[in-house]
Image (tube, rainbow, N blue to C red; front, side):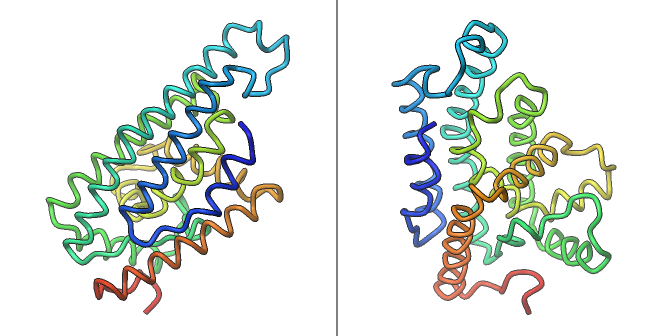
Length: 233
């Protein structure tokens, strides 16, 4: 996908509230889908040999369908959940990608995650788990190789990693209570895309995006007098 369109656009659009941020995500994903549709498989930079490989073509096509699902189903579902958190005066657990540790959180970090999760009322925890389950199903297409993760990376990796980061406290607690086999696809895809995001050619774009996210969190804390993020008191 044209790098002038995808990573660059994340750094140019500055949201002022959660709804606006995820509206921005939807716009970026829609633009990415239009680019793929307009250019066909040529936009995926495939060689002629790869173009003749049926499995490769199918994996690319599946990735595009997954992008549509993320834009049309998962993003709106997350927007509703963020609005619900605002109504209940609850901050997301963290907004820093590097904070996420699924399998080896320190005792102190796990206790903060447990405390945050315990503050979620049923009418908040239920849709959050529903969203995480939906994301787990979505991620399975990429982890299994049915969908090409590289095709969706530029458009989906930043918002996917941010979404998982916001709610990963509940993932940590659930995996501790039910076993590390819970949410295997979400954790694998997150770790894969986070590592790729941190590669030199992508890191600058993500650093700028994280600055925007942190600024958004600060603005929302001031505007709604929310509790400070876990671990920052």
